[in-house]
Length: 103
Image (cartoon, rainbow, N blue to C red):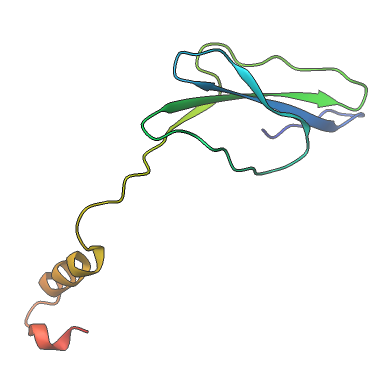
């Protein structure tokens, strides 16, 4: 969340998270952190929303619906060997070069 408030300035903000269609829960409260690590479950979609608070305690509203952003957690390892695929793709791009020229 990026914000500015003439005169008082942004003091901190709150972030809520939601797992799928579940309830919104407080994740970060009164924070000034610009990044944080969220531990989600594989195969789940998580939604996030934030609200700001200024130095005189005026508090903004949370976004409605699915919030401000979402992410799908996929912790499965991709199949195959990415290095070998890169070599095959690179070989085809080097028109006229033999495979022995690739390292």
